Image (cartoon, rainbow, N blue to C red; front, side, top):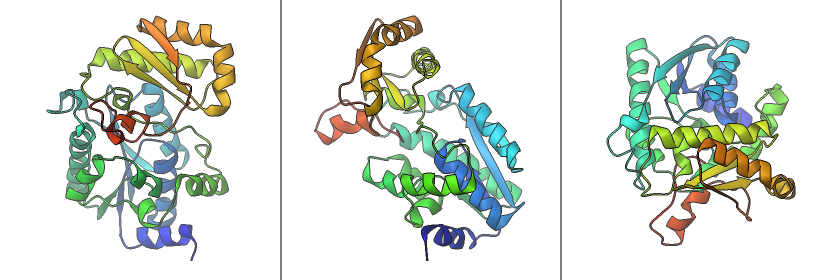
Amino acid sequence: MNKLQELKQIIGKYRSVVVAFSGGVDSTFLARVCRDVVGEHLLLVTATSSTYPSFEHQQAVELAKEYGMRHRDIVSEEIEIAGFAENTPDRCYYCKRELFGALERIRGQDGYAVVFDGTNADDLHDYRPGSRAAKELGIVSPLCEAGLRKEDIRRYSRDYGLPTADKGSFACLASRFPYGERITTEKLDRVGKAEEALRGLGFRQFRVRSHGDAARVELAIDDLARGWEMRTALSRACKEAGFVFASLDLEGYRTGAMNEALRNGGSHAGTGKE
């Protein structure tokens, strides 16, 4: 049995499904396969907040419409959740508990059988406090259960003709801050503006990490040379967004980069699905 068949078998255990839907690579693939298995007994739910850029939300809405899947928006303003803005190592737990709690209420009220999230097998190798919230609330992660890694999901997404097959990985903007740096809507907006500017410069996979007044730009390894050539434009993008300083990370983009301080015994790191 291949991984796609196994995924379908896992989904097929449930008569109806709610999917936590961001419009990213993982949740889009999961939603598309769910549509094949449970048909119209599927609801996609997208949470909007200051940590979720408007362009990502719009893409999620358009994808749901394109594939004829029922979709609903909810507001989940993480910045108002106790324990979130303080940016402790468990920040993602508080966020996910709020989100999954809302999805569980929708599931119960509307009579759906289960809530799925898009956690994949690669996510098990990084610090993911949000997974504790998922476990506590009975959220199922079928991609992970089927052993699907990101490269598998991209490959199957191409087979399905999904426009997200080669989309860059995205994480909530709160993951751009080191532990201990208090998160505010102004700081989130600053990061969001800087990343939107980099997107406009043609970069696809990147992060703008916030360290006080300094922006640390992570670009895909293949883009580092171009990034250096465009360093003036990159610096301008960060400063116009509100940063005072801008730097280019020589190691390039990597998932969980802000968690490195945790692994090295430091007191400052980021968290969340990065």
